Image 1: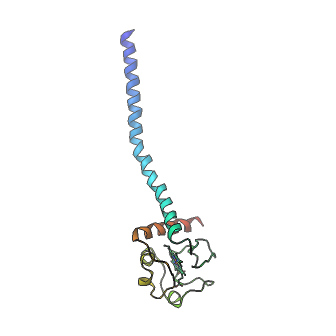
Image 2: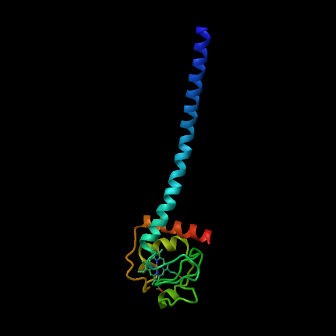
Amino acid sequence: MQPSQRTSRNRWMRLIAGAGLAWLLSAPAALAQQPTAASDDAAHQAFNNSCRTCHSVKEGDNRLGPNLNKIVGRKAGSLPNYNYSPAMKDAGFVWDQDKLTRFIVKPDEVVSGNKMQPYGGVSSEEAVKVIAYLQAAAEQH
Ligand code: HEC
C-alpha cells in the first residue's frame, strides 16, 4: 500500500504545481488588464480636474466653455449656440489629436487671442489623458 500511496501523493503534488504554474501564467494577462481600467479612471480624473469646471461632454450642454461632445473631428469654433471669441470662430481648422494636445497644453499657441481663461494649461501627459477621455466619451454618447 505504501508505494501506491506515495505515487498518488506525487500525482497530487504535480497537479497542484501545474495549477500554480497555470495561475502564474495567467496572472500577467490579468495584470495587463488593470492598467487599462486604471487609465480609464485616470483619464476621467484628468478631465474632471482640468476641464469640468467649464466644459461638459454632453451635446448641447454649454457652460462657461462650449460643450466638447465629439470634439475630435469637430471644426473649431463651430457650435451655433455658443458665443466664441472671434479668434476661435475664425480658427479655420478641425480639431484632431495633435491640435487638441497642443491647445490643452498652451491654448494661445494654437488659437491666439482665444478666451479660454483663466485656464492655465496642463502637461502634455495630462493632455493625452484628457483626450483619451474625450474620445471614450464620444463613443458612449
Ligand atoms: C476656466 C474655464 C475653462 C477651463 C478650465 C477649460 N476651458 Fe476650454 N474653453 C473655455 C472657453 C471660455 C472656451 C471658448 C474659447 C473661445 O471662444 O475663444 C473654451 C474652448 C475650448 C475648446 C474649443 C471648442 C470648440 O468648439 O472649438 C476646446 C477644444 C477646449 N476648450 C478644451 C478644453 C479642455 C480639454 C480643457 C481641460 C484640459 C479645458 N478646455 C479647460 C473655458 C475653459
